[in-house]
Length: 100
Image (tube, rainbow, N blue to C red; front, top):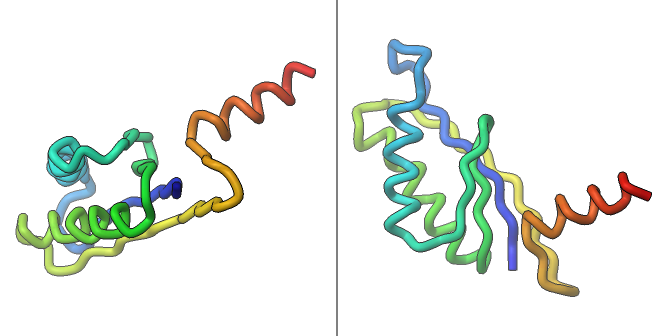
């Protein structure tokens, strides 16, 4: 299972606010059924990599559908294949080490 962090940034929209684009993207994510978590700087997804990339592709289109002429999407992929991994497990691992 992969953990992916991504952010979609429409450029040249005439506004510094992106929250309405983010809200539309999260509506799409809610409908997708993919496990996701909104963060202040992006969104984290968990699941099979092929499925996540397909969902990110659809998210990339959201600003275009709302009139943006240019969109930059940044993606970080953690694809661990030796054992199952989740975002929460990664955080828990660090917290466990902090308490020792």
